[in-house]
Image (cartoon, rainbow, N blue to C red; front, side, top):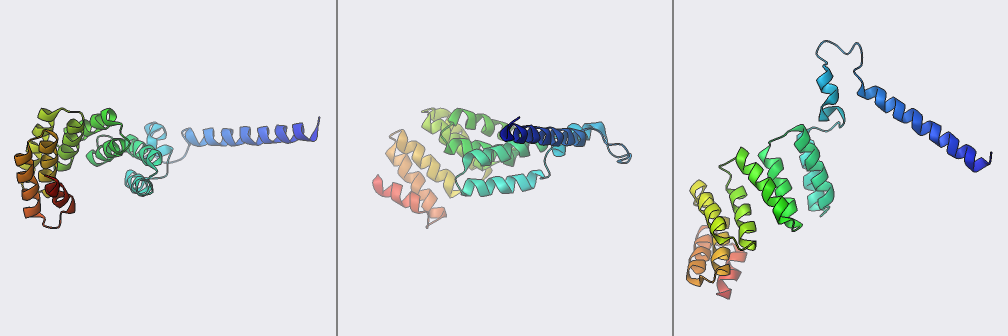
Amino acid sequence: MSVFQLLMLGASAFFAFKIYEHIQTLQDPEGEGENYTQDETKSANAFSPFDPEALVQKADEAFEEKDFQRALALLNEADSKKPHDSEILFKMGYILHQTNDNDEALNYYKKALEVDKENEFIHNSMASIYKDNGEFTSAKLHLHASLEIDDKNAITYYNFGNLFSEMKHLEEAKAMYEKALEINPEFTQAKEELEKL
């Protein structure tokens, strides 16, 4: 045997041993106490030391660094540990929306909305996708729903202005941008859009 073959054999044996050790940690250890159940060994928590909140925080950091794939992977893991959490589902939808995967983003927004029907931000985000897709009626429905939840949200009026502008209803768009600025006089984007009309 050559030196290279011996090194490869040693490396293979080492990795085989490490895999064996890992498998042993996944089996139900004896003597762990009465509170330890078999279901716990199969849960997502058995495979990751991080709790869902820590995973979401790490995902937020990855998102800030524009590492969208890592952020999504972390949120997927958080979702497996804490299913049906509207914040996690919303963030997954938001990242997918940023990467222009609008159909998948919409699916996550819908799931988030099923859990939290009174979330104006989910309605706004869904309206944005519907607007981009040219589904103006659906966009309006979600913006109206957002205003029913909070009629003092300048972002909703701004989004309504964008929708009306896209629909070429310029007077309605102007009224919505003005309402957004009435609520938040420092809303730069609303000022800029109003000046374009």
